[in-house]
Length: 295
Image 1 (cartoon, helix red, strand yellow):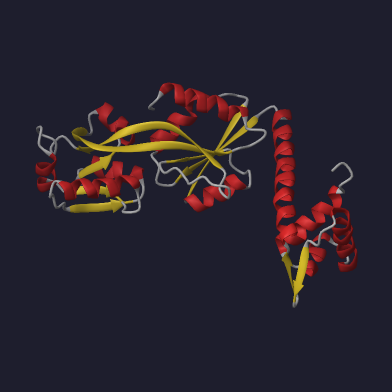
Image 2 (spheres, rainbow, N blue to C red; image 1 turned 180 degrees about the horizontal axis):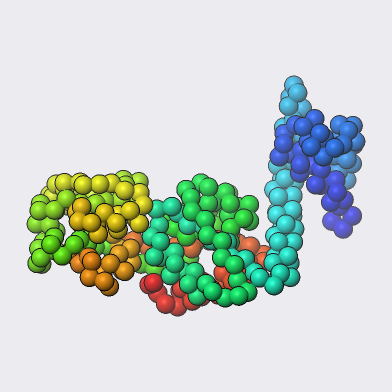
């Protein structure tokens, strides 16, 4: 539609998201009549009513919902293009990484290490909840979200999930706790456990495993931070249920030992949007991580 006025479309887009003509006019420093006129010109051009008024509220018509979907795509792509060109013109390029607050710090570090220290790269690392991180990803404020739970993908959540690593989960403790090759049942009977919280992938799978072998644990702590689990294990509080990458430094120094490996796995994912102009730094990291398999 070569003669579509995108100025009119942007005004429609703003009103559609605000849901209120008066509020949008004030925000854009326009009169209500001028803003209404712009939208009426767009409706005349496409031959469809975009809003219907119910009392004081504006509601999208079916044509309006279709137009809004297209407007979202158009203006999001425009912002993405500008962001990409701004980054390309900067002497230092930014890589914005979000990670679930419960995710292993060692895994996060292993992912970004290939670009750390490069004079042309600035790494911005944020942690938070899934809702916070995906909102930032949707707003193009993040290039990637690192997580151990792949999000659903459908027409309304167009995320791309790439598997980066798959680690077997084990039991780890100090040398005075790990003295032989005990069975899982014996370890659970003899030692208190340091567990992830119940809303995590590892905990659900571990609880199922314990039910299968009829083992009843003594729980020393339930923790939603892998770094804290590592510290508690290191001071001898109990056996920690974690992937080896979480305690790799302690294992290397001999501060912790492996008591058992379990028939459980934690999968790590990189979640991105299907962007027209993806960050080239991210593509480099994803290729490297996929090529190495596990961190």
